[in-house]
Length: 413
Image (cartoon, rainbow, N blue to C red; front, top):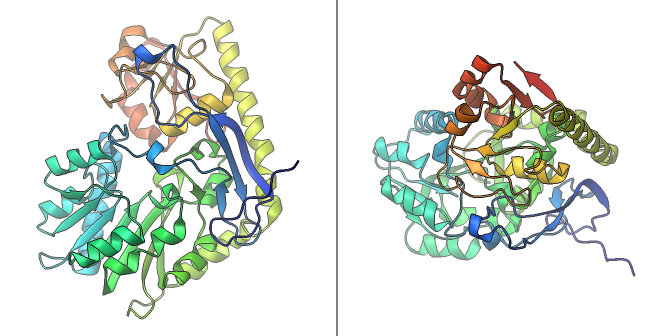
């Protein structure tokens, strides 16, 4: 008996078309404690599909948000210096553009460890963070950032509004893809917005995911893979109007969307229409653009497997940098384990001493690279490759080389 087609989470149309099927995979941030190494793990389907009605790319099977965001969440934004610089630049830009001061109010959804809001607080601009993960929320409060531990949706936004929380700037960086119910999330925003408030949302652009073969950005925390084309009806249904767009280099190519209430005075710029035209020209409203992605993804998998197996056959030592979610997708999809990669290093102490989910590769501190002197260092979070290769430039002293798998397999001496 065939399984009934799942409905699109944006428009309700039946999902029939595969975009990227990565098989079964563990939750990307479910690191394994060494004393649990003999225990089994849960693997879940990791299959992204595209809706031919509204062009939203989405996981066919949604895992519960509580599997990802909890008191032991391991992703802390502040461990990336380049991301901190991006956050500081954003605060400076928004303060100037919106004329924010001590009488203003800022709210960030998914504020993590206070990596961004700390700069508003330092500037004397009142800010509140919304963060469901207890350990990152505690880290934010230690930075002096008022943080509430909750998921943002219509019910929680109504409760915040009842407490008098009305903001001039509402922001969310790399959270929109993490939301199982887009309508509940976006539809909650007007409740906490002043009449002329601005919303900014940053997210990896689906156009770049397709163009640059970024299939490793597909993992269970990311329920959706976003284009402006797919988002416009969602914003309109919530009573919001997109009035400006910025293209960013972060996360392999992102969009920053500016939105406001329909009746607000913010003029719509030409960048909105230009972005929609760019997406149409790139084929984001053609089914063949999506259905051809899977074979290109499988070709990259085979190429990486061949390279690593050949290197091991030649006696080469291989390590990796960055115990990132995207790295776990890549390793599990490609079937790469500790028999190929000796260890992965990461600067986050919360990950060190644990094993990667699925692949069970041990996570060590960055000093391990200089102790063991591998021949190849595979950079897993390629979106910050320049930062990481600068940090680890010393590997060249013994002839070590960097290995990258995006958008194709290549060595950087």
